[in-house]
Image (cartoon, rainbow, N blue to C red; front, side):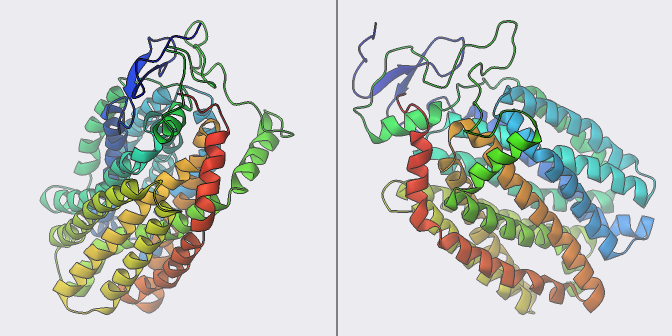
Length: 482
């Protein structure tokens, strides 16, 4: 028998399988608190710090092992290819398994593997370890992104995903700075030994995050938009179920196979990916972000070397300048972009996609200035502004990706996104390294990313008309009562 709601602004919902209902106030940005977003942001932060220690220490590593720029760029590319091969299965697991456990396990394995970089005695060993780390490092994204979609309703998603993206991209310059400073003060291996410790701690912290019922964030989004939407107090939202006896997978009502696809095997996975790729906004967001990550991947990987070669800075100073300008730009861009994205969400047609596309174009223009301008100070300013634009685009386009994919497919949706942008981001360091070897100039090599970034901006901007319809279709895919 239905229990009357407390009032129009308060509902009791079953947010966690097997636990008492949670009272939620309509319109609250973080109905279940910000702790889960903080933990996921810490995962992203430590992963990117470790990954970019290599960029900061790269000149010292090249001197020790004697490999050229093309071979250096190939390290990142090979690791990304290994990640791409595992991301789609990881996405499917994120749609059926206990996501909090998956993220904790990935980070724990990563913490063990990262010690191998510091123990590498040759380029071949270094290459092999980084491939394994590249594969492990990206596997946290589908389950963690799916968790954020369930824990944070649409009106606050840009902030939730923005926090994770801010940590992710803040890790880039922090890793670069730390890698350069530790390589100069001690040894390039020191940073890799040190970073494994916080990695293990963060793996434990992820176990404190509760697994939510799938789709609860979308149902709250509908209720926030329509206060007439009601529910029985304490009832499980449609699509959620009690956990299986004995502590099995948390979603007994795991997503069924799409019509006509079958639920098992490679053919079923391919069919599900095709269904996702039919979402026009998703295609545009994935394409735009993949091109953006292509530019950013090359930009951050080679920036310390750029400042060393172009301006004669030592390793620590080059890493500090490149990383510092990037960090300030990223934090400013994420903060401003997330705030603007959530402020205009639901009020203006296609707002998140429009804001993301224009932010990406702004960043591209600023990057062109950083490549073209010779004097040191204006070049650094342009580099920082480029990161403001890119970070603002990433916060909004990541939230848009969650908005247009149904909760039952969100893990796989983010796996598709992460697969493509990981590959794009990995191609950047390798292609810029090859261009640098061919032209003898990193400044000229950077120019190869400008035209693709312009194309990516236009692809994203074209999708604003389809965003609202695709977001509505994702919400209607399940029961929208909270």
